[in-house]
Image (tube, rainbow, N blue to C red; front, side, top):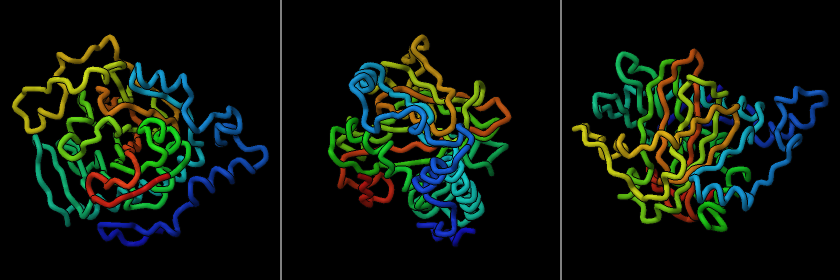
Length: 302
């Protein structure tokens, strides 16, 4: 079904139709299951952010839009992502393997693979970036339902990609500790305030499955003090004393939902205690004509 992965673009010419084509097909089928049609047909949403949403982003640090993408669109994307991940794991022995705080990492071409901690070190945790491996991922990132909100959040008429990744959160998958994205990027970007994120849920998120969590309003105080626990990555995690747990919100949303959030917002997720996987695509946008974090190529999106 898929062409060889050469460490760059995996050919998916024979893969399922593009997301936009899938949306058009779903909306044209009479008597289709309402859960499989685009929410635009039933509950029209503006692609651009409203004034109310912009105010919420400024005050709370995030915007939630439920079921932005239809189930058909998400199924099409997952049909590409699953073999893509399997191919990456199958070739991981060819890459440069190393350990950070006891966890397994592999650099394979332009991609970095993060694996679950022992004893599940063969289970993929994060793949970054994903867009060079599949045109379906890039098609989603160029969709107006993501691009137009990002134009407003970056303050730019046109945007490009900074980075993207897929979190796989298998049943029993490990937590993502409390952190801000800005400390990761401060040595590579001078435009930290223009790097908004969006998480697109690829599975229905149920209680106990390790849903995305944020500390609302935490983006307003800049970069918080980091952990001081002697680990290699202590500087990238927010000190627990800085987390106001009274302001924590967890998102248990249907597949295809989009959560836009500020790069200074404290966020993370618990371990997946459910029997269902909880995959998500997370992308970070920036003003147009700027290079991406890892490949240093310019990927303009709209």
